[in-house]
Image (cartoon, rainbow, N blue to C red; front, side):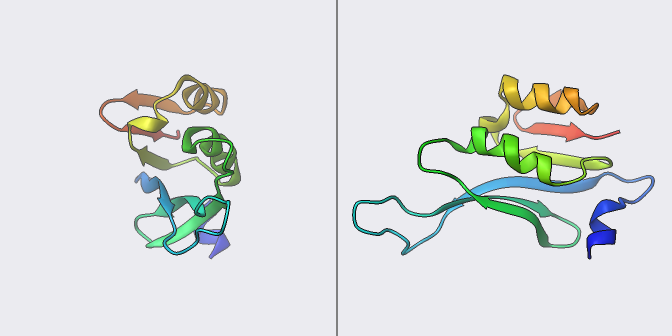
Length: 110
């Protein structure tokens, strides 16, 4: 599966969703529920990368690290408005991808 993920289709952007979810029934005494942030390949229907969000940071900050874990070339990354933040956009620009900003963050890696 690794070779499929790293070699996107030549003339088609691969839809990749950036999404965070809190896991049910994970609340422990004096702690917070487990919250995960994941990148989902919409064509494969599988998670490409996933990490727990530390209780001291939010999803947007966690996304900075998560986006470094996959090859962005040929991918269209979509997420909700929470991810339309300067640091995330700057990371994409630094990695030479073009950005469009609308209701959702969309990043097409060239």
